[in-house]
Amino acid sequence: MSNPVLEIKNLEIDYGIVKAVKGINMRVEKGTIVAILGANGAGKTSTIRSVSGMAKVKSGEILYNGEPIHNMASFKIVQKGITQSPEGRMILSGLTVEENLLVGAYAIKGIVRDGKKISRKQRIKELLEETYSYFPILAERKKQQAATLSGGEQQMLAIGRALMGAPELLLLDEPSLGLAPLVIRDIFHIIKKIKDDGRTILIVEQNARQTLKIADYAYVLEIGKIKSEGKASDLLNNDELISAYLGESK
Image 1 (cartoon, rainbow, N blue to C red):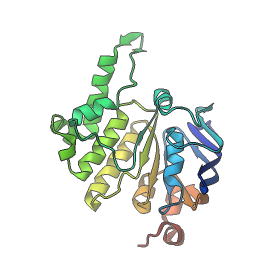
Image 2: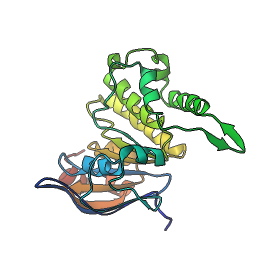
Image 3: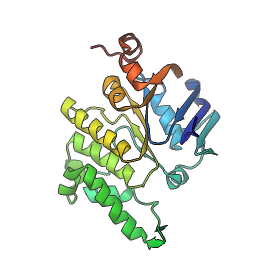
Image 4: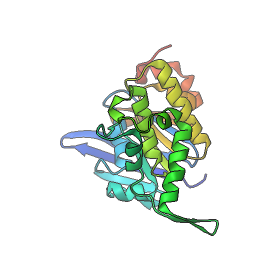
């Protein structure tokens, strides 16, 4: 088995007397979509927030390319190649669409590629072009105030802002939350394309069926513990599991 991009070992997260995550283990292989599924209060968001440095780990390890990152400052985690599109989108309403995207590029630096120096400015331009290729509507509305976008467009902006950090590992927290079914379908189609273009994705979702259709592997959490795990295609066909632990039925 190859070395995973991300490995979570015996992770525990407490909020005072509330134990949100109770000793879970997960792996995310390079170039895959891994889903964390479960009902409200299952520990999904706590888990993904611990990877991005936004939730404190009580015990256990989080390894990124073999390096411990648990309880590391969020900005350092971003610099290492992990960015997050947060639950609730957290769009900066006083800024335009493009200004929101540029906020996501704050940690970008110049690099050397194929023996040629690429400046920070040039890299950011490339990242903008890439983001707009995934979300053409954002290019059309780049000078528009972000607060005036629809819910689906704001979700696209949140994902685009995370992509502007040039992540190796993209974290998505509830990208379908509050969206209409047709918009959800479009969002998941774009997430799959981002993965097909070479990125690794860890996604937290309540929309189990849609997520399992695009994921490679999935973990089902219940009250802070892993209740089930396996290939997404296998879990998608397990109606009993989806009904019992994810609150969905055909």
